[in-house]
Structures are given as C-alpha cells and as structure tokens.
Length: 336
Image (cartoon, rainbow, N blue to C red; front, top):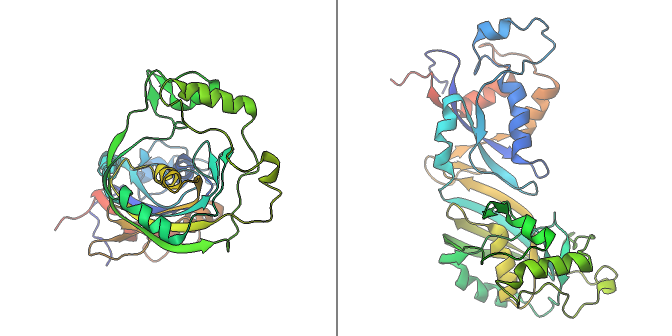
C-alpha cells in the first residue's frame, strides 16, 4: 500500500542486501550519491540549484549504517537517512542471524579467508558427529574473546598493531558476555566444495611477532604448524573439510571467533570462508516472523548509479520506488 506522505524530504530506515566484497562504508558512500540527488531525501529547491544536471550533487544528507559487516560478509545492512540515523543504535544490541561456512585445517590472522595463514593442522579426524557434539558448549551465555587482529583498542592502541609489531599485550584481551540463542550444523560439505586455504602465509618473522604479542597473556597460544609441513599445505590434493553453521546471536558476537574457537575445541583449526547475515532485528533476507521487513537488493542501486531509469506515474525512479516501498519513515509521513 502506498505511503501517505505529508511532506518531503523524508527521513527513515531501510535495509540493503550487501554483496560480498565491498566494505559497509563503500556501500554507504555509493548510496550517498543517489540519496543526495533524490527529492525523497533532499529539498527540491536545493536540487534545482544544481546547474549541470549531468553532475550528481554531493550534498550533505546524513547517512549511516546500523552494524558493520566485514568485506567478506553479505546480507542485511540497515541504513539510516536523516533523522533515521538516530535510530541506528537500536540495531547494534539486537538479535542477529548468520549463516557461515567453516573450512578446517587452517587458522588465519583475521579468522576468515581474507587473512593470511598463521598455521595449518590436521583436520581428518573431525566428523559431523564430533561437530554436533561440540556445538553444545557454545550455546547460551558464553564468554567470548574478540580476535587479536581486530580494531578494538587496548590502552589506545588497536589490537592488530600489537600483533603486527610484536608488542606484548599489557593484559589479556577482555572477554565479552554474549548470548548464542541457537547454533546448528545445517550442512556437512565434507570435501565437496570449492573452498581452499589462503595462498599467502605468515612468514617466520610474523609468527614470532604474534608469539611475542601473546607471550605475556597466553604463552601456550599456538602459532606454528602442527603435523603438516609448510611445503605440503598447498601441494596436497586432499581437500579440507567444510561445514555450514546457522546461528541466532546477541549484539556484539563475533561469528569469526565462534568458528575459530569451535575448530580449537575439535582439536583442529578453522576459519570462515562465507558469512551471510540473514537477520538484523526485524530486517531479513526472507520473512519468517510477523513484522519482518524485506531489504532492497544491492543490484537495484548499482543499476541506478549507471542509469536512473524512467520515472513512474508518481515521479519516482525504480530505485526510489523500491526504497519508498520498504522505508520505515521517521519524519514526513501521515501518522493517521
């Protein structure tokens, strides 16, 4: 049903289906180009002042996102425009759902396939049954340590700086209390998949630097290969095991840490190779509950950046209509 608008421009919230590859800020910056040139969000008089209609107005409409996704990740990204940005904090500490693929036998510095190999270990002993049994210890309220290669700061210094420069951590990384509402193994891929370990590996000096940074807080932290020679890690024809997890978690949960810690619990190592956020509060990829809200596919915006398209009977371009149909309006709508 069309929304009854009192006045333009509008402020509000909508969900975008982020693709894997770009950062969340890349997505926001691309959206700015469209939003700053749309009468949905900008006063028409300001738009009329743009002398060259072929040029996009840079503008200064306030735009933000309600929970960063890693470049590797795809899925739900909530965007706020204008006064809608004031509502974005509601999406930080809320229930979120993810689907992720774990690849065994290799640990990376970032805990995902975007990073470099830190160590490789045997994985052949891990079975579906062992994974299902191990999941129980990660359900409910758990204490979770963020990855050392993260932007979190300790004494004003990002954790990744300690790790890369070999500076000993002044104290253990503070663990966070998070809630894993549900955690299930939904697909066992075994060796039937296209995923492989990253080709780039930590040098001996990088491993020593990481060991030094961890030495004061966890001298036993493994940073060396175990049972697989360095020259065998890429030469072997044996494909490492992969499996898919689905989870519903509280805000502040690191999915990469769940995969990393689970692999350790299985006596191996592992990292994330795919990650999809399927729910952020009431924004979802596929509605399953009353009140769920669909998101706008990123392809809609990509097409609009190339060509705005024909306007409909109400004067809206295709991307504007898609956003308007899914927009939760904070300001500018008839409440009656």
